[in-house]
Length: 61
Image 1 (cartoon, one colour):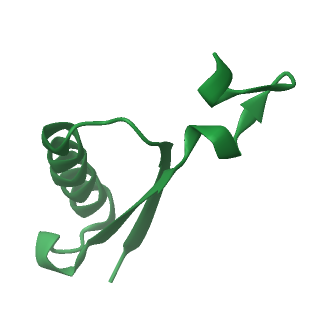
Image 2 (cartoon, one colour):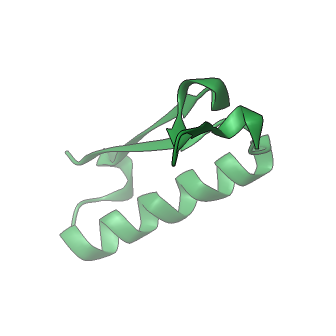
């Protein structure tokens, strides 16, 4: 039973997240041989004010 966690910054639409989950599920199934029914995908959305790059928070860009 593959478990996949996708961590990304907040801001994607529900349609984008739905498409992501569907495509990740198919990719994992095709590459591992696991059935799509056994693939679990978690999306962890992070607040842009909790992450920074080069000393600048993503919320400040």
